[in-house]
Image: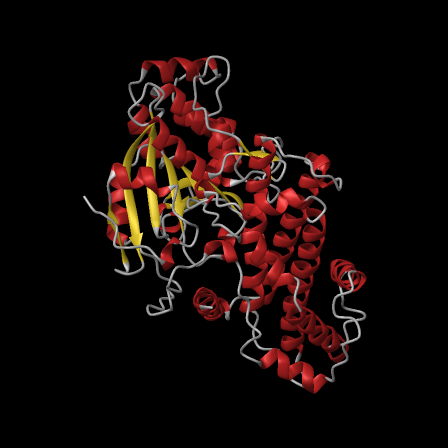
Length: 498
């Protein structure tokens, strides 16, 4: 119970963090998490069909790894749906307003998705008793402690959650959702009813509202994070504030070079859900036209290659402008009076941003490719080509039509004929071959000091919630950073500084 109390308090804290978020954004995130769960579970059904065929089939090692990676992703998405519910403003009123109805729909739809998909997954796993043991295993490399599947079942197979479903289901009449319910909501609701959960429980509106208001009506998920003994002694919510300081941003400008890769992390963001590991974001430093001109000036290889691309003057900057005139024009437009030096893929798409915008975060590491300037020039030119593309919420590296953050870096430096480039690891996540930012940090840790090392660490700013700041930390600390749990801010100690 002590462990559950810690998780309850931590999630109650999350309520205060997101109480002011726009309901529309919460609905968008909820739909993304629901789609993520469905995608991973469909992937498991197709890739591991023999394991779910109702027989005691012993999984092979590669199947176990597939199960563990998928299980980790599922727990992450379920936590996201939990957080959505805790983020919705109060909707408990006998005479609800339009805003309260919108909040209820957001809460109700995310609950239905979580409950129905959990029942589907449990039904799938229970066909093979061996899977129960595998999903309960401790997997240190994925930060999965022992017993997560048992706690998952306890969460979703008990009378309490059935009563919660019944209470919410009765409120759908109060909010008159017959016309406003989405197809997904109806699918999930029907799936729960077909599973026999919550039938026969009749509650009046008043009783339903009483249950909703009760303090015990609080999410206690995810079990896998087991947030230590953190009991909320330090409740820090930094709305509009980051641990990276303005002075540190200025220092970054002084040390960055065109072609550098930035790994970034922002705490307290719902967008971290679904992105595996501690480092969720990567960006490419392209610099300003003046910085690029100075950096590439006098490099014979760059000049000769530029001529071969059709720019007779050998001026690389003119080549960028001619190949990508619209993107180039956008890159020159200041962002809140700051020059745009970064190209990165965000939910809004592939955009040019300023250092002040991109590094307005809590952790930053800069990796410098061990490549000649000619290769960095080619990578930057390729990166300009992706400007304006939509964000890839499916995380599908096979398509160039939409781009995710690490995909921009991956494809800009992708090796090809006459171009050594950088080789980043591809991992299988829910049926997609992707390179998460955390894998880039892990690769650095594995390659550092060997003949395979592809990048150098320029600087690592390590954030500390306890000290309310980031400090310039060591290479050893960076090499360990990829192993940090996703909710590192709740248990982290003061980072080691240089």
